[in-house]
Length: 142
Image (cartoon, rainbow, N blue to C red; front, side, top):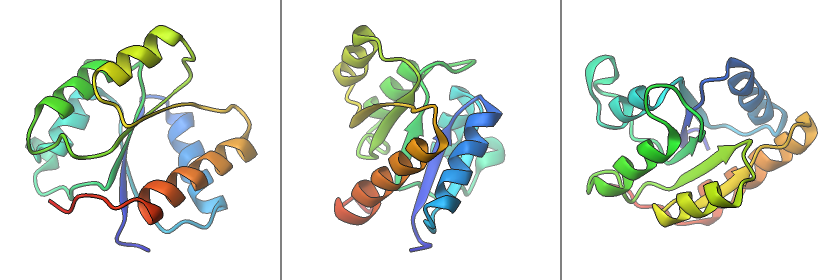
């Protein structure tokens, strides 16, 4: 399905490459857009500045530790904004801290996933995320 899109908010270029590779390895036809910080993520979602006319993503993969605005701040703004709050947000991070998990769910994250370090495990995770969120789950269209 090429009409599905994911916004990846990730400041680590290696993790962006790993995500793109995992999508290729899993043979998933998904449009992946990556932005490196929280401010650009919000600009993309709100179609501001250089992101004017950007398509609304079906899913947001959000890192916790980001420059400018961290993942918690971005998540809070997404969930407070009536135009954005229905978008599913998956926190995809290296932190397994119970405090981080609780803080994200308190702000309305749809799912919290700790990034595996192994490429095969990461590919499997990306495939599972895509399978559930973009093929099984019914998502809002607005």
